[in-house]
Length: 127
Image (tube, rainbow, N blue to C red; front, top):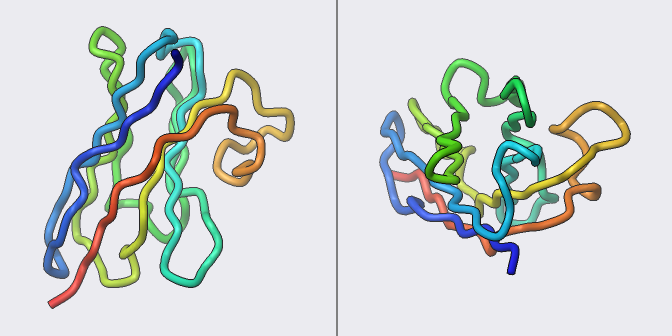
């Protein structure tokens, strides 16, 4: 019943932009913390950005600060990740995830505490 579906990935040249979407169903978006994570080839999954529940506060990994922007449309139940000035190092499978509560405080680092996950969308930055 509860579902998250990522879309918007693809191949882009360095310096280009993509906007990822996370469409959620089966729950109210404002009741969950939403995180974007990525897993580069051969590496562990890492936090990219996240947005909190009621107030919509945001956080970003140091590697993407100033280039990526997370936002949400509560009426449409969609969370976006706008990615600008993309680098080859951004190449990864990107996942969105939802959590009702995160016990440790940081929504970026608690990859193991999110309750629901999408299947991921591939982002490849190369030229």
